[in-house]
Figure 1 (tube, rainbow, N blue to C red):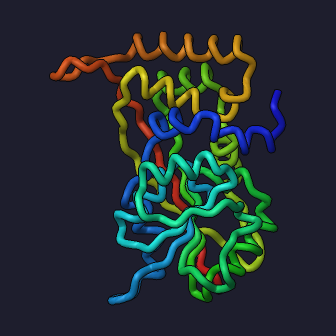
Figure 2 (cartoon, helix red, strand yellow):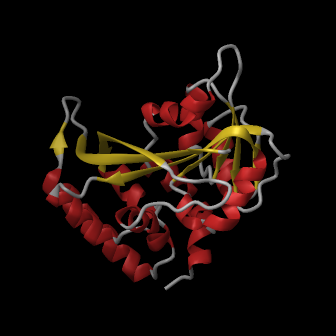
Figure 3 (cartoon, helix red, strand yellow):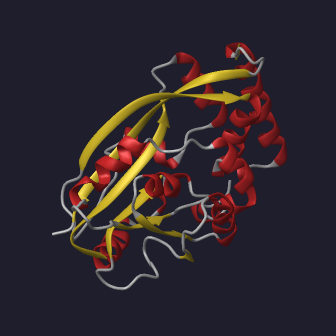
Length: 252
């Protein structure tokens, strides 16, 4: 079993699968996280931390904000620059961001807070945020109230993000207080390749022995065959329901 640190830095080896398989973030969730710092006639400055290949970054751009992308993995940032043009990228972490004091209106993390030290990260985010700025956390989680989805999770294994959300939720520390929370439900259609990429891009699978990884992907392929539907253009897909959980807290 790989260590937690090895898992957290494993994604660059599967950047293409990550981009193909991972879902984007709903615009509604990003708008909700940024709402406290919207001001007429003024651009919102956002740091997307743990940006990966830019799944959250592109939604922040679509929301009209100015954004810088920060990730510990240079390979993931290289993939981000291919898919989201014109966004400055920096190697860094939530515990050590290459940003001046009080330089951004919002720090957002998509599917990333479970990797950080919440005390050190909260202090660093508080340093980089202006007063009245917002820390926003968002995660896309498969809706396991659907029995087929629960079987999919059993085949691919759960993630640290899912464990955090089914527990007490994300924890923040000084200078932040209580997190507000909102959720959205939605459905994503995936081809066989995209579903397998979604599984192959997870840290548990990336770092698993080859035989274990092959067994997981075979089991997921069988689940695809069980649920697949054929669209009008002949493409076979499965509809995968998600719940997006977003949190926000204002820097005093």
